[in-house]
Amino acid sequence: MTAVGIVGYGAYIPRYRIRVGEIASVWNEEGENISRGLGVYEKSVPALDEDTVTISVEAARTALENCGVNPQDIGAIYVGSESHPYAVKPSATIVAAAIDATPDLTAADLEFACKAGTAAVQICMGLVKSGYIKYGLAIGADTSQGKPGDALEYTASAGGAAYIIGKEKLIAEIKDTYSYTTDTPDFWRREGQDYPEHSQRFTGEPAYFKHVLSASRKIMAKNKLKPEDFDYVVFHQPNGKFPKTAAKKLGFTEEQVMAGLWELPIRLMENNIIEVQHGSKSQRTGA
Image 1 (cartoon, rainbow, N blue to C red):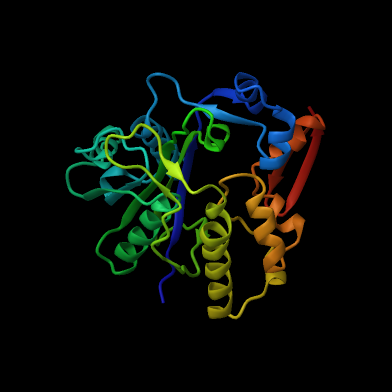
Image 2 (cartoon, rainbow, N blue to C red):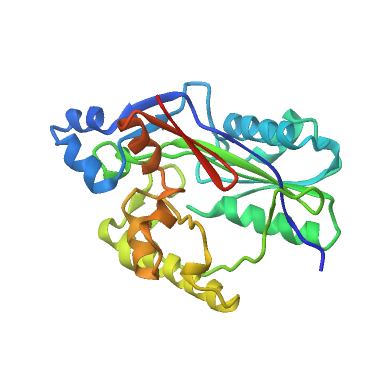
């Protein structure tokens, strides 16, 4: 069976930052306690001219530069986001035009809080594997909103990643994919509302952990794999605490999960250490 996977990838994160302590000071809260509780120390902030489309374009251009794929060979573009700038007008068509991929392709926007970008990868995989297209471009990007004073204000930020899916010159084969889906209303925003609502603690056990743990257990059982068979594992990261808890419940070690957790760069910064990984080797230098 022909392998399908990632041919190239790119990412973009706005350069502006705001620390949790700065947000907390506005509400007379203790920033250090909030940072420890959430595992978050700062977040990205989009500039006035940055939105989901501009972030998607930058990530897509980087992905193309990294792998040398001709944009005209991309047969599908899907942009997953919960913060598309237009209620009626696709982000994907703007991205397609910006990277000179038009007009011989299919494009659409996806919206599914926290996993729309993953769904874009799955769709591109199916189209590539069936031979319907040569390459597919899957993007996940957001300029997430958090209501002032809400817990989301400390974590909702901006950034995006783009993946070119194909069969040739793979840098990573996608061995399998599994989805665990329910209608769990833990996070929502109705049309016309400026900020999303969430169900506070309900977001943890019946929402995040039920889905992450169920999907992880089922895909490992499907492929007859155990936690010790993996070098690293990366879970959805709405904060820095949930992924570590999920890893522990599933039997993964802290070393397996920390490599992909956003808390790691902060630890390295605090220790004045920069870590650069090359394959299986790691080089550590003083900052």
